[in-house]
Length: 384
Ligand code: P1T
Image (cartoon, rainbow, N blue to C red; front, side, top):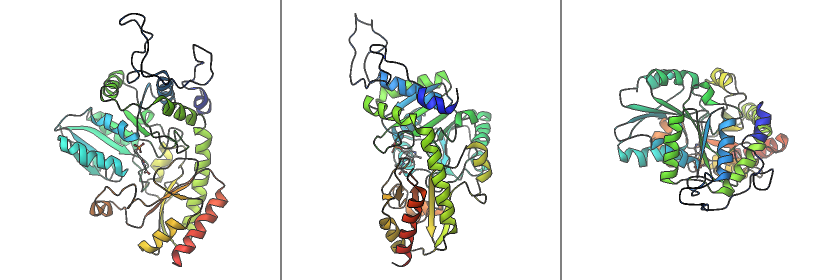
């Protein structure tokens, strides 16, 4: 089945009790049993819920995997992967990634004796040099949040397989419509379903997809034992979001490309971070593992002051100043004070995330309107 058909039909089965074409929101905490232990495959809603089951099936199909698991947030999905580990285990993670993932690793899991090495994943060698007998997990994010760095999933997967290390790829920025890490050799794909999968900025949710039955069983055990499950209403919203993922991503990519080129040509702009440019260091890899380059862009003004950045951030009318991304509406964000504020400044600067970097989540509005909005805000910033 082709992708465009999968988005509509994956996980969708007419409801057995009524024939309802849309999976109902099974808003129930428990299921009546005929006799002790005799049930219809549903015992208690932390363990099983039909709406969640439909979503998990859809997630697996669209990510080219066998099994999906849904969680109460993206961070909860990451947390479940970390619970595969034990004290003394080592993790190699990207030096540029979502600030909340860094916070979970450095503030929570390092307390429990997990050791983290943060490396620039632009070169596979940087990962190889950190591998030792205790290395159990490689955590990659590509493109990265917010610097749009690219990691070579095939190359990293080859190293991970050679050393029998799990590779988990946070595929949030690309979405399953643009990149499928399991097909490139990863063991687990993680999503903040809050973003492109949901697509409408109305739900917080996370997802994991994998191929290996034993790994799925272990992660399912963690999901039900630790309890970070999403509610059925949220599962319904993400199921509905997935139906339009393909066409939304087409428009996000078109608008993203138009805005990236506009910014690159703008005399007041110093640097634009977007993997679609041929001079982006990860362009060739991005082209080989992504279908298109997405709607996430970061940039810096030549006028490198906080005053100018602040004027720009509050000067847009269509781009709303907010954390998050991947919704139909465009957002503008200041990583240093918002999404990546939990990374110590020195560390952040060392990894290339400056105080004045601005991140855009380009929505699916009219590209000319979005460009006019940015142009106006840039004028405000450089004359502020
Ligand atoms: O917010 P939550 O659903 O828990 O997902 C966390 C997460 C994980 N991975 C990536 C790449 C992310 O971007 C996020 C969440 N990011 C934002 C809220 C943001 O504005 O960057």
